[in-house]
Image (cartoon, rainbow, N blue to C red; front, side, top):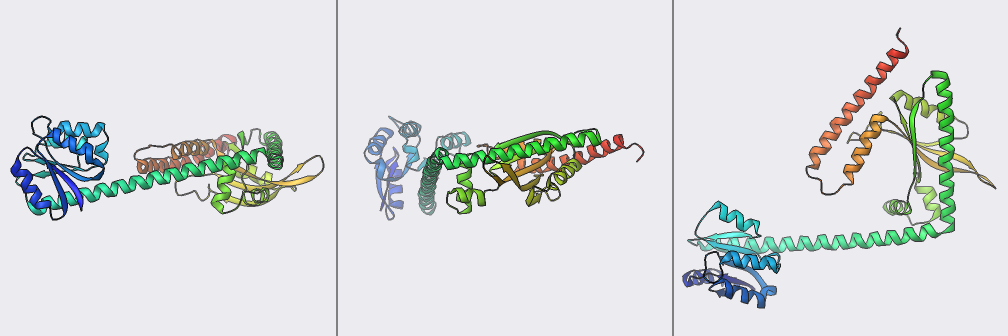
Length: 356
């Protein structure tokens, strides 16, 4: 049987509560706060609940709660306040200090038993959840350590560094091709098709995580076969039709192979994300060979890129309240940005071709 402690300076109350609870629990009693703290000091590890009067000599119930908070017992033992009043301020103060529930006078046996039972069960459930969270956090910590170890091992391998050099080379190849197209486009249409080019190379940690999610072991072959976006190039354009015109000019080149196309402009993601993604196989020219290497090229307008950058920051930021409302607002912004992109494109067309 679980043990509970009833603390009240009125012997009648102590005995009434003992009689109500002794069939289900081992009931110990204390007549004031000092005595209660002595018993908690000796037996707090084995105490299932504490029924505590607020108004007592020597040390009152608030003093007991304060001491329990200092010693962290309040997180080990559910406290139910014995009270004859329903003062909102008093009850709020007790709840803010960590009290679980109240047992009001005059005592109704069934209510007392149910409140004690529920307080103990809810407290135990809470502790089990906290323990699971701690275990999951420890598991994630161990996984993170493993990922870091694997990433460090990978980054020191000569063959991996050679592969990363190839991915850096394919980024340079694509950037060069895009800059040439920009010059040609500028000559033909008297304006530039894109505003800027950004590039990035996946970190060893990110590569390891992606292979693990897909269920593949960490090998150079698996990196090349199953991670298509180790090398990434992002092209920021002014208008949506520039995206499609530039993508067509790039993929029409006879040494580029289009492996995969995902058009999130035509069909945006459910959260509002819009971009054109191309997975390309592009040749690089090494000292002793010509080799095709995969690269992901993303095309966005300035507005699409601004939205995606904000969404990414919020997605990975911790302790954000009201995430549902933020997601709703982001989706509304994405819809507004889409309309704005095409309105600006229409204005440009009217400026470029005033007769139309």
